[in-house]
Length: 356
Image (cartoon, rainbow, N blue to C red; front, side, top):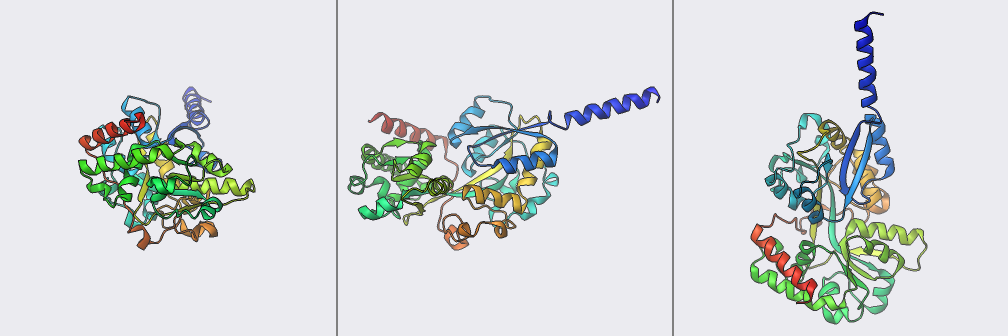
């Protein structure tokens, strides 16, 4: 064996080691959104490792990345923070040639205003910011969960005082309050924000907590009866309550005044060290079976049109988890806020939480 052959074999051996367990894809993700089985299957497909870090809401994720956090490859931003991330040069353009499975995405969810041409992201799952509740408790009290009054009307809240939580997210809570007031959150004026702040302030004394994570467990064990949160979280709470054989059912409902339809996406950070693995991961998640696993795990529907046949039967029948196109048309995808709107909302939110 000559020296050149030895050198080439050594180089190939070295490359093979780097392409294995030492080859790492870093995800900055919503907590609990991917199953271990999905991760392991991807690791096997790419002969790599996946490491995840987690966040509770978009504001937390955006603040951390804007402050200069590095080390992540793929992030899962909601639609309304795509443009702010692009403006801050936090995302890199996708190479569509490396994502052939993008053909599986329903065209209805592509080329949206927040990312024309899907230059920076691919939609992944849809969820509804809505109300999850203890079915037995609310039926006994005669409380209607299909209206935002269950979150904001002091007369209704008086019957469930201390048993209600809302997200610790100004965008989500202000949006819900505007729906309650009959306002379009995408066309909100300063007066609308101030009116929403007053509604929130009047309701706050009846709430038990602001919560981005613990409300799932609290619903499942019966410590709280109503939560403003995400349909995916309510699905998990229902699963947990059922598994624990609780004497009640955790249910979820859309609100007749309107709801926010959340579109979570997959995007690659500009600072990604492994954009090659990042593209492979996105393509992997756009396969019908893999996409359906998100729904079956999290109770979220998704825009991958080849996923439907693989949904659990009970989730196919759930109008929140698996809405019809006609139903989706009644829900609102939030646009990007202007800096002025964001400053106003955050100032009012601080006042509410401080009791002013």
